[in-house]
Length: 139
Image 1: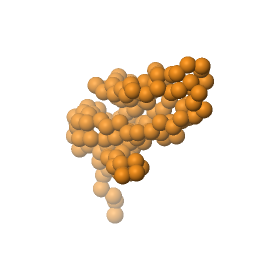
Image 2: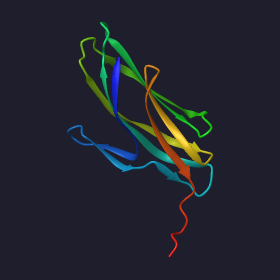
Image 3: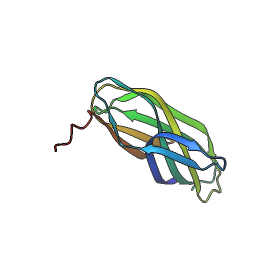
C-alpha cells in the first residue's frame, strides 16, 4: 500500500456541515498550562491521507493514533478505527476524518508527539508542546 499524508492537524473542535464538509476550529500546536498536571477537556486530530492499494487483494485498513510524552513513553490513549477496507482495484482513495481525544492529562512540560499509523506503518506525526503561558510582553 502506498500513501500520501496531506495533513495531520490539532484543533479545538470539528464541525461537520450538512454537505459533509468539515470546519476545523482553533488550530494550534501549543497548550498553555499554568500548573501541572493539566487536563485538556477536548481536542481533535484531523487528518487526510490518500491511499493506493498495489496488491491484488482487498486490503483492510486499521488507523491508530498514539500520543507520546516528551520522554517517548505513550500516554494512556491508543485510539483505533478498524472498519475500513481498501478495494484491490483502488487507484487512489482519500480517507479523512477527525479523532476526538477527551480529558487527556499532561504531567510534564515539553514536546508531545501524536503518531498516526495505518496498518502499523507510521504515516504522520503531529508535534505539539505543553508549556507555561508566555510572560508579560515588555513595554
